[in-house]
Length: 263
Image 1 (cartoon, rainbow, N blue to C red):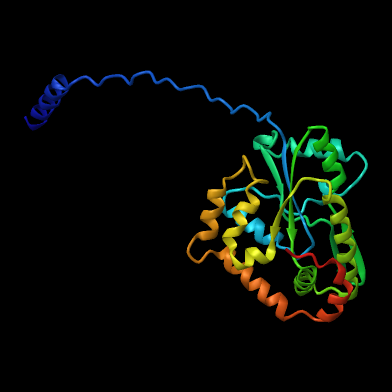
Image 2 (image 1 turned 180 degrees about the vertical axis):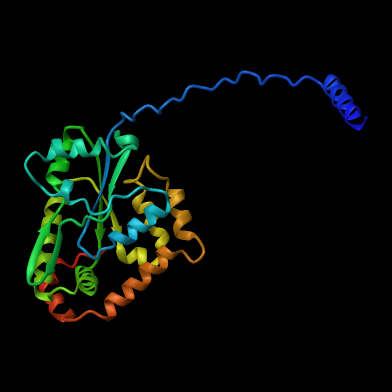
């Protein structure tokens, strides 16, 4: 009797249950890929001696959301076929291997000279190649000169790379001659290391022209004026350390006496 009653109850519940509606047909929007960027190739290049603030400027730009390329000797060293090789490289730096909206070469000093084991290695971005591409309107070249007292710049480099001071001084002297020769007839903006150390916020208006269309001056100021900005504190700390620990500073001052063009 119990079994019959249970069975009857189950039949009654099933009969009285509301029908379950079939799931509605769902429609999905087709997946579309963003159109590849075909605008002008913007190239930003920092120009200055090793020790003039490349990494500081790069830290600020990265904190403001700017993508920076670090050490790209395969594309910046002068070589035959530079123009075509560079454009091919640039056009593969965007999303999915497409053209990038901009490229910032942030840590390739111009010229870059390092002394290691008594061997002087001098390499530099092909500024003549970049200028040629700019003149033919294949790139929009923005140059940022990083200007610092060369004695202080060499002292900073020596502290980090532990090179031989004599060779480092001569490399710096040759590099300064190349920089002066190139920049005298080329539009560029200048970042003064000393002014930025005294007031890191001063860096924003100096960088803004070169980063036009990439990041706003307001975004750079937000980074530099943030409470306890690590970028500003690092700059002041580096300046004090390199000045205090520099060996053979008097010799460097003699060798670079006529080229001390700090702003």
